[in-house]
Image (cartoon, rainbow, N blue to C red; front, side, top):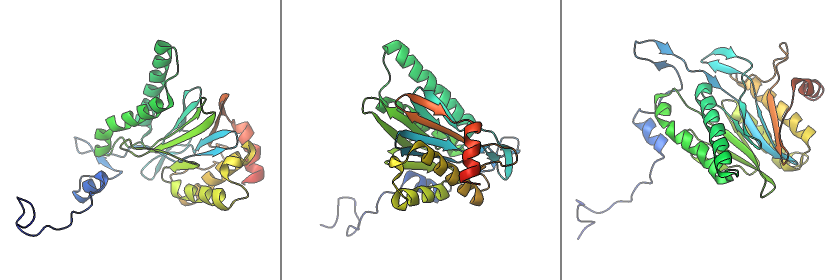
Length: 270
């Protein structure tokens, strides 16, 4: 006998299964980022938000994002908030379509509040992480159309373990816990390179750096990304628009103001 009942000849090695996105690309079904053609033939270029980063430092986790939102080669807005507070110890940073991401953040915030008020306790860390994953999976239909792609970072402080936790996702909802740092968006390749270098060969690992050192590194990383990526705003020196930088520790979330960031940028970056 040769092979299995339905084989016409000797069996051959079975090819490894392809990633879902790779199958779509091969079939020509994976959407381009832009433009998107709507029903009446008009062309709509979706607004995109980039770039975001997060890493653990000595006291907790730092989350930062530039302020630029673009549509193709146009700058739509230079004061977008890409780091959103979900609860007292959780942040969601967004890269992708802001309209979809902001709605996801609102749904998460209300879901966490409802659970806390109805159950008289906080939702578990696993529950929070999976809630965002489910929202991304539910958004898959828009992702397939190329109009709702969101690739977020979720950062929180685990009070039970007394430790910061950091997660990043793909557009289809797969979640990954980052050991040290994460970055997404069009400027993320440059940022990941900077963070990897500093974490591996810098004066000390990222999770041993004090708050001041962490803020300086975040500003330098975003400024580096802005040099090579036009969709990353970096720091608007003329308009004095600085990135959003928020810190999470056991006491909660703290947002650094422009007044705090301006002297640091002038002394350590510019």
